[in-house]
Image 1: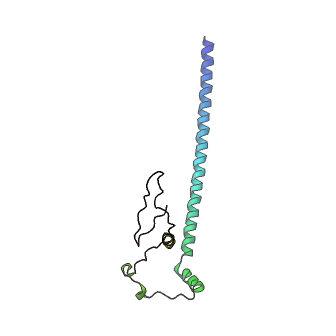
Image 2: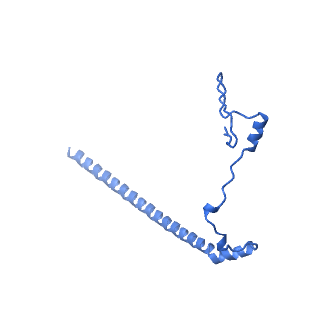
Length: 135
């Protein structure tokens, strides 16, 4: 009986050692992954900083002015008298469905809703100025 308990104790000791080493290697593997991820994050932050610097360089007002002078020679500077309030702008012209009006005048217009089989037609007369509904 004593031998059996010794063998069980040795097996338990070996099992716990294997378990401890597996946990140790898992934690070291996870630590390496965390370190690699931190390095990648630092590289991405550096890349973002470079892109922001490039954006600031490319959108400098003096650079844009040079490009505008080079590629837009006929453009003039905006005068303060050219700026108006939105309320003073003219109203937008209403949209007109000229094709629909032409079809209506020829009697080829489609009903606004599809006809129900066996039912009465549900078309209503259209008044002038209303937009045509598209199916």
